[in-house]
Length: 449
Image 1 (cartoon, helix red, strand yellow):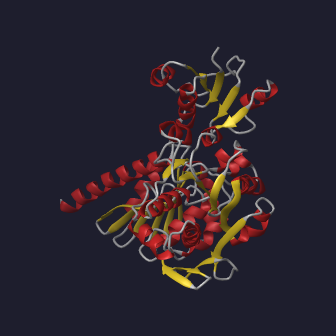
Image 2 (cartoon, rainbow, N blue to C red; image 1 turned 180 degrees about the vertical axis):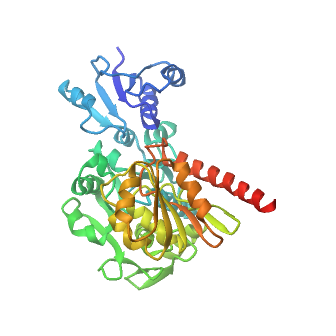
Image 3 (spheres, helix red, strand yellow; image 1 turned 30 degrees about the vertical axis):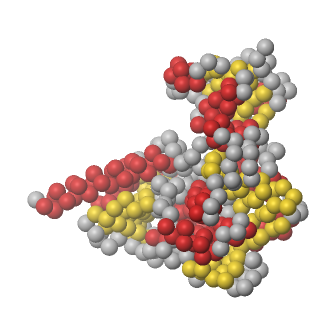
């Protein structure tokens, strides 16, 4: 009799886990509470060996020998509690895929910059003659279960790991790991900063003896309790780190080798620290600092991460829809310059935006806040910058465009998730670009007449 597995969630991760299990002879039940999912279409896509249940209120009947959890499920979800009462073994999709990996692993986590970092690491290693593959939380690549189904081998795997994935992962292994940064994020899910940090630092326990862990200097002491092997730190020039970022340069203290970040995506004080972390990791992989930065300088931006939509009538338009937390929004603001018409809002991940005040004053001409976070942003930014609040995203974008003048930048850097009005940050970014281009055409038509 075929073994039966339950997969929770019909998104990218759940479908990947189902396909991997079916390829190994399992009978899979794929379940989702969302009644908007087309179960019939999904059943046809996955084929024999799967049963799809959408719009489910109760857990499908068992017994199941394994349950696979998609990252979107909180640990407190009633289905997980029900499975624990049944004593069904639980595993996250990431860990399921990880069990099938062949070849070394570099794992990357952090609050911001993970996708750009894994893209950079893979590009530098490929140029150095290796055969890396990217997977995991990286939206431009496959979920890990999908990646190993295609082929379990890589040299190395470069895996982006989110806190949602780490929450359901307990047995990971990596030859190298990079923790880019940890800022308050996803508190709507994890509850407290301490819990969020604890989950992120779980990645340190995945590093094998003889491996290397690269972390911000501020976390070095804390991770020593989790990993006793080699640790390399990065930070600012006021910290005793091995790699530091200062005045647009990354400096390796041993030998005082220095490379400029000019012309790269992270040529600013906020994101420059992350660049120091990537360079530190690549140095451990045998890639020289200058070679690493040369690769980064040539690398295209990922979608919705500080991408210039265009310049229309002298007004520059920038899409940083992926800036879904305060730290990312600060980096976007500081990297944009001055005279900014800033669009922020959506669904908040935290209860205060007061730390943004010091970064908008003198830099932002006006803030255009929308959605569920509009009231919070208006309250916390009051007095530091002119603020206008809107219910809809399109109204905020339209107002920012109408107020903008030549020489200014209209910047989307929301500091919030998109989930009040869009399914994801990518759809929000696409809507922003389409709306601004439409508005720009209307303005040019009016100017011509």
